[in-house]
Length: 512
Ligand code: FAD
Ligand code: SF4
Image 1: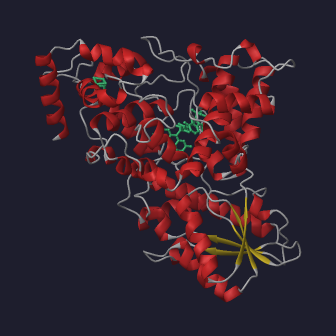
Image 2 (image 1 turned 30 degrees about the horizontal axis):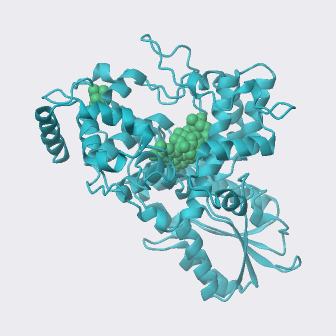
């Protein structure tokens, strides 16, 4: 687009940074900003109330900031949006009314949104300047170049390459800091029986008038949506997000590594950073998050195992899943390699189940719009995998219930990492485990009526029954996977009579 042309700059709800690519070169008085809250986006999946509040409040704060800078902002509010309104239909109306020559857009976070916006511009015969999202460290072209010709797209290779390229946690002679690339072995510890000690108290962002107004709006317009907004305190401005990051680095980062995978009743946040929603809405930039953690290591405030563990998530996993999403979409969303066909159990929307681990995780999710990674992967995700829930259904659940859920990050994590629906494009083996894993990594089983060591009988843990049933059902497919060998060998040790009982009990569980 020529520099001097007047344009319409689209800002989506997850592009809320003055440095977003769509605002590059924008001039108040010449370029117009376009933002839209709309019903169809809030209901595309059955969104948690807190997720809707987060997006709307953060958008309204950002629009006010743009207006303070002198921009004209065309802003469509939810109050004026009728059910069925999509932002594409709103955009077409405004393009026809304003007739800009160009629309400028930062690459969206969802394939469907990109397609709809491109179609709307085509319909209105407006040229589109689609810009690379500068809130990722790896561009589409760089990821595609890395992936080209590789049989396996493994996180570990990608992550090491990025460490080398960026010099993050590297020594002057090109070696990984501390001599190892991966400190996971030091980082998978459960808590002692007495539980986590001195977990810093959680203190989120303060509500202001804009957020309070949006909470009221969501309560009125989306009363039957899942979840609560009673405890809403997620950052909705860059200033609040920076404060959350600072607090994490000061109070929690040091403890992040060792107990990264541990879970504990009544402790939803533990040592986690709570920055995902801010990163995904672009209130924070990934490099500043990484640098803050590395600085804590350099100044001796946090050990390497915690800092490397954290950097691996943001520099490695976050960039990697985004690359996979855009490389494999749109076909990726339809994958169901394990042929899973069960409906999602109703209790995923209420938390009402006797299985204490699921009740806790879903309870946290409904209360805060948050559960930490291992709760997502090894409680709700694991149960869905073992039960054999249709990937499409569990994907829509994850996209609905977390405040940080945007499809580019949610879908590969759900379909690939957690459900193995892509047959191993992303994970080298299914994350399948029995109730014994949950017993080891949490105190959930202590307050549960089931026994994680039992696979059949009245008090058998459903995870344990379904785990053996999962191995049994998929043993042929998994037999060629070296990393599954030990688990499949253990399956072979179960005698035929016991296996029949496991199968029968699994059928009973599936029937609810
Ligand atoms: P921390 O545990 O403190 O980790 C630090 C940061 O690393 C996170 O904020 C996040 O930006 C990044 N990160 C960590 N793990 C991953 C990962 N696997 N993929 C991408 N980035 C990662 N994350 C989302 O941001 N949105 C989602 O919709 C989402 N859906 C998920 C669904 C499933 C089934 C699973 C298993 C994981 C999902 N994750 C998702 C990844 C991860 O669980 C969350 O990023 C993390 O729990 C957010 O909490 P936190 O900010 O306290 O993260
Ligand atoms: Fe979960 Fe099974 Fe433990 Fe109960 S016994 S908390 S269902 S793993």
